[in-house]
Length: 128
Figure 1 (cartoon, rainbow, N blue to C red):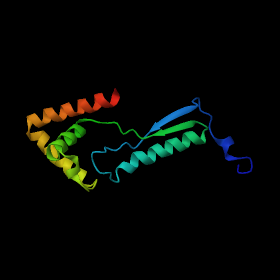
Figure 2: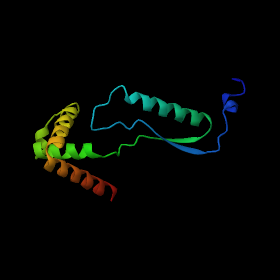
Figure 3: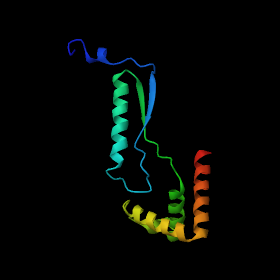
Figure 4: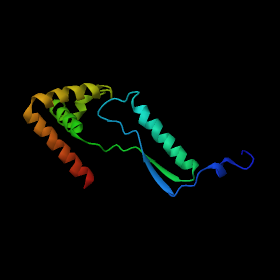
C-alpha cells in the first residue's frame, strides 16, 4: 500500500468540487468548546473529500446577521453615540453588551422595533 501510494485506495466520487461550510459561530457571542464540534466535523469531511481527489473549498459563513446584531447595533448606538467612547473595550465585553441588549429587547417595544430596523438596514447595505 505504501509502496504504490495511498491514492489508489481513495474512492472515486462523482463530484469534482465541493464546498464545505462549517463552524460559523454566532459572532455576537463568545466562542466556546461547543463550537469545536462543527469545526472538527467540517474539517474531517473536507479531508475525506480531498483524499478522494475532490477539489474542496473550505468556508466559514459569517453572515448570519439576525436579530442579535440589530439588538447590539441599537444598544451600542444608544449607549455609545460617539464610538470612540468605547475605548479599549475587550471583545469579552460583547457578551455583556449582548445580555443587556437582549433584556432591553424583551422589555421595550420601541427598542425592539429599532433593533429590527437596524437588521434591515444592515442587510440592505451589505447585500446591495
